[in-house]
Amino acid sequence: MGFKIAVVQPMVHQPPDDEKNVADAVEYVKQAAHQGAAFVAFPESYPGPWRMPATFNPIEQMAEAAAKYGVHIQFGTLQPINDAEATAHNLLMLAYPDGRDPGAYKRTHPPGPWIYTGGGYWEFQYVPGDEFPVFDTIHGRVGLAMCSEVYVPEVSRALALRGAEIIFLPGGVDKQKLWATWRNLIWSRSIENLAIAVSTQNLFSAEERGLAMVATPEEVLFESTTAGLYVVDVDLDRVRDLRSQNDEVMSAHHNAAKAGVLTQWQRPELYDSFHPRAAIDELPETGTGDD
Image (cartoon, rainbow, N blue to C red; front, top):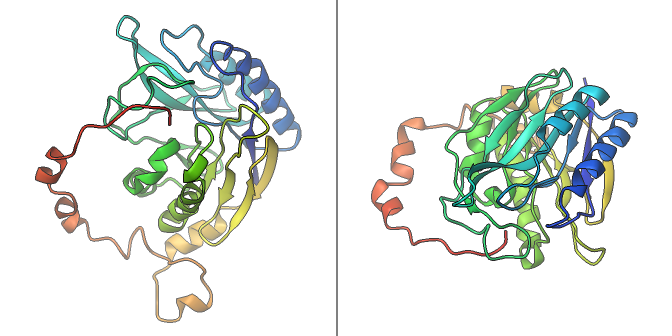
């Protein structure tokens, strides 16, 4: 049975006025619910906060909105660790329509410290998480990953191997010269994991180019570069069908994506040889700047 995902690509109040995004987000949820959405997807760090020390916490209000309007809400915020050191986890949250505590994913990649200092939007000392939770809903199992983690295929694969059928990949700010490769990778994460991939982005002016997108393994259902709330019809039946199949000689006649990539194609006995520890230890330190 199908359902609707509302993709919100908002015009954003940037820090230090980011608390104003909370009221906007609740209004978007209300509009999406009235259009029949089962999920509402927001960008990375939306509605906030974006900086440490955190001056507000939107989780309770977003959870209340999810219960009030009967929708799931994927949104972004911070989990402060130490105010004096300005350390925090960057979170993606999933609030539920039944009022249970929201689920949380702490960004895992890359290792810290990283790019959330020294730019115009974020200002905190990023601490990575180390878990890949998935979340059961009445529509399907959900995975959360964040922004440029789309460039790390292992993150989405970890979620898919844990059963995620919908992977939310919300982005941060204007992708500039990365736009084309970023768009490619959103769909690629869908294709290679036989999942629905959903993304959107913060906009700070009408001149910026967004990247809101809903992709299935076989087609891009929706995309837009402009601000707005977009409601997209989706169905997991085809995803589940592809996951249940084995790829065969004549499969290309009826499948537009390779079936069985999470089962038939796997060779877990080789995984330790993919990325030897010596190679990891020799990686250079990462730099700083906005995502």
